[in-house]
Length: 450
Image (cartoon, rainbow, N blue to C red; front, side, top):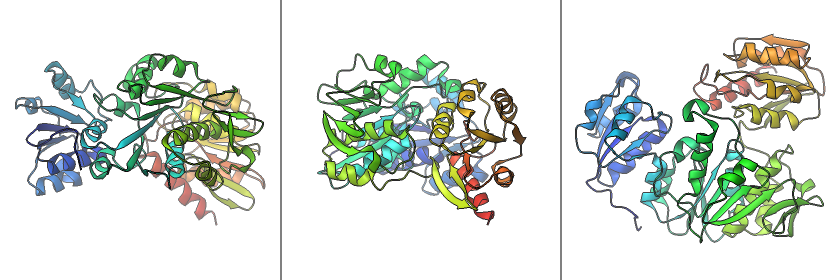
């Protein structure tokens, strides 16, 4: 397998383990790099660090000592979650040491074609849809990135006839240099991760880095209904392919006469699509456009859209208990995602929300709460959400300790035909290490109702 870049004998510092740093360290070692690893977690509780030490790797745990920069370093691979104002990272920048995320490492490892999907909301659904649509195509799809499997790990094994379908975060895109997807997809831009990026403008710029290395031979799939997105991609060198739920487009993907259209040709009727929620149509249009560019057939696109009902933790149907339907939308970590989740239902709603306080209020949620009969909230943002619920006129408002306790309380207020929806509008990190664990706790609590 041809490599784009020779890693043998390169001096590399890996900062931050977790899943991506651990995978990056292993790949680098495999290809002969001289690797030093640094992680904040104490060694006693650090399974990944112990495993690397057992293989003879130099690992420093418990702090980020500046002395790590005293030795020659060709580049650093930084865990995406570590901010750029971290003292070790700042010192490395002052020394002009290149700082990458493992996404850049992936691009150094393979010549396989890459499709990159980013945006504030809908990345996981779009990535999953696209991977399914490409099954049976000339190139074998491999889904990876922020969706679960670390991209550099997959890229290291990819063959020439594979196509990597990668969900990419703004954190990951901040750490690229030569990374270039053949097809880049930008879904939308809304307030998210402003504590990391400092401003919405910088957040948008991070997302737009997806296209910075593209050429005329590449493609930029973008949301033509989002003015901020359109502004961010106006100067890209690649071929622009728009998608829209509001405009009729001769080129690109749109809705017309209850059909999903691509380049003015019908692909599938909307009524055949099983994925719930009007907001899902944006993700479907984006995935359809990227799939068509990549060589997917209409048959495979239709087959996907008539069978795919959603990904875990994103408007996931859990079960019906005594006529009450329960949905897990734990991946809704911002207000926009919760707005769209609420809008997907017409039945009376009991909303479970709350989590990490990033400093924002929830006034933007108020217009969407008209059909909500009760709010059960938890976590740091509980007081702010309760305030918004009162302004929205919701009569039943309760605060509980966590998601597990919220489920039986919500069920107690429900009636046949109601929907109980976990859609937190907040990150999970004040109470849970991930939105996945928060969603799993919700699912478990729902099953206990029986």
